[in-house]
Length: 361
Ligand code: AMP
Image 1 (cartoon, rainbow, N blue to C red):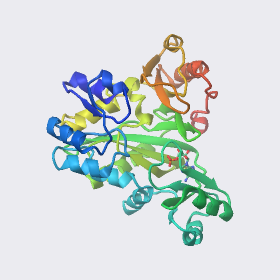
Image 2 (cartoon, rainbow, N blue to C red; image 1 turned 90 degrees about the vertical axis):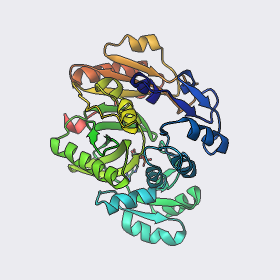
Image 3 (cartoon, protein in one colour; image 1 turned 120 degrees about the vertical axis):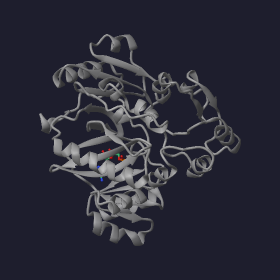
């Protein structure tokens, strides 16, 4: 999607991808090698004007190697800050950004001090390589927390279980000169730890809440001298925002911007890393994004629902795999919700519509 949006701006793309036959192969040259392959990295360093990534678990050493030879944006220090949940939360703390109370959890000696901070229930998470809800256990007692430590191994973080009202995310973009733009907050619904749907602008968001989210994003981006798209996942409760985690890349909860905004997160990421001016996005009406997970629907049926925009990734179906998404646009939130309901019904094995903005009209 970065290449699809970057090609009209005059750029050509080469991809480093270890998996065979990646969808990006339709759009440019693929170097099929592991992310730490020295020959592959040398080829990229020799041929690219700028390098970016859309996956935060690329080895920090590879990013550092490339950064000595060619601009790597977002800067590799952003990878360092997001690859370890503990370091990430400590950075939020140091910037005065509220989070769920947390504590490191490496050995049984950490259990008491951790539970003293988090209380029960507590969410025990692996610090590294967790995604889509993998590597997380909700513990309702000290015994369950000890069992989670056994199951997940060392290198954990324990967090207070937050009874949030809803999950929101902000997609922010910072240009090479430090200029910044943000998209409206999106409301996100997960199931089994996987994002199912985003609605944007999130219903009922006040100017104050949007401003708070933008200000938090700005603090993080300035700290990291960031360039590109940064997404921050937030919990909303009692009119406050707690930062859960951030992603130094274009984000699934920003996929709606392909059709709901006149400049997408992908276009603005490419603009940022290539030193173009950013496009301040106009969002004329609400939009929704529904992920297609595990199995493919009938594309013609989806495309026949008014206001739908189908984005298939040309990936082989596999349980839990994101195969594409459907954006739905319309004149107002009611029309978008009606379209989303129709699309849900066409998605194989998907749950019924979730209570979007239930507390927010
Ligand atoms: P994460 O991998 O941190 O994004 O977590 C995946 C999902 O688990 C989040 O989107 C939330 O729905 C839920 N979750 C994570 N951390 C907490 C927490 N501290 N309290 C309650 N729910 C959480």
